[in-house]
Image (tube, rainbow, N blue to C red; front, side, top):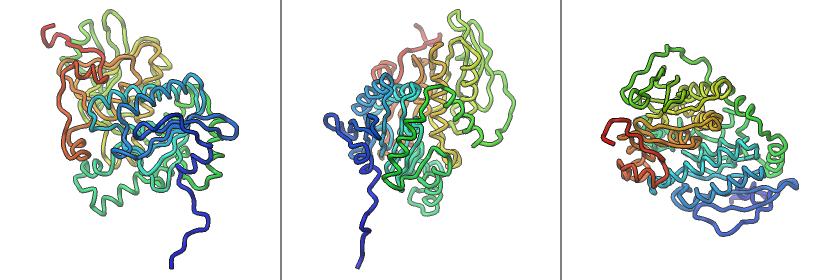
Amino acid sequence: MSSTPANPQPSLLAAIRDVVDFAPSGDAIDNLTLGRGSVAGTAVHVALIESRIASGSLGMKECARLAQLFRVVAVERIPLLLYLDCAGARVSEGLPALGAFRAMFSAALYAALSGAPIVTLLGNKCFGGASMLAHLGRVRIFSPATQLAMSGPSILALAAGTSALDEIFRAMAQATISAEARSKASGENLLFEVQAGLSATVTKVIEAAASEPAYYVARHHRLGERLGKLNDGSWDRLQRRDLERLFPQGYNVLERDGVVAGEATHEGTSISILGIVGGKPLGVARAWTLADRAWGLAESEIRPTMLLLDCDSHSAKLDDEKLVLSEYLCDLSFAFASLKNRGLTTSILGKAGGGVYVAFAAPAQRVALVHGAHIQVLPGTAIASILGENIDSRSEFEDYRNAGVADEALRIGLVPE
């Protein structure tokens, strides 16, 4: 005869509702429920993203409503509790979902930078863009069964050349992306244990939150320490036909392993250049190197910056996930956002997609697309592994504009104007 504990531990979601005395505001919007509550006498906003449809993914309607909430949080600086049981952007909605996620993540990024305390609380899954959202919080509280990664198990298995059902791979993935593994990666990743501890943790974050950018710079340096010693290769002069046409008044850009940095004259103005080119998926080392350059510009330069992007995806390697790739992409977004006030644009030279697109596009004031370049939700093989078919195809510029993923077309002399 089996027995159950007299006082079973409630789920994290149930604990949130109880601890904050959650009161919903209006009806649920697909996977999203918004509301208010209080913790130790402090009013809080609450956003719950549950896995009700499409693996808890965020579609256009959820993103639009979340963007409104983040803008309110940025102005009011009232603490936000964000619960995520979410597979990321809803790939079945195609480019419009990516455009909506771009706008929402931009609002979320600047809400975090406003100094509003954000605590993220995680359900069973937190993949893709949702894992980047999770790292906007000052702390992350994991459920026992949480898996957090930029890529879900099926995509990680595809990249490793195996099946997500393979027992050896499943063990390796669990040892990499589980709640226990993530709790060892950072002191800001906490395991949910007891309900009383949840209230104390949230209260501590609210009291300790600060708006100064020094917090995010310090976090960047901690991520560098996590990486250890990087391979110091040489920086070489980058010469590309598209750059010659984009900057006919001259440019001086250096490149190392796809990371680019330099300066150019654009429409008569001296600008800084940063970016990723070459198409190789973006992993933790190159993301940190580029973020380091961006944080350096934020401290030393006052001129506008243009971000160059030719990279269709983040890395799906377990080695990058072991170091928590989501946190490095979020750090990259914060670094780019630190440059916005002096003028920040993103120019897509080739392919762009996934978390890399979000990291480059969300902080920018404008996204420009060179004629012939291509934006996709995820690479076709990744979409096929999720949906069973590749629904993404090359689009015309007006499709990109209407979807909200690009704002301006750049022909740069490649075709007649």
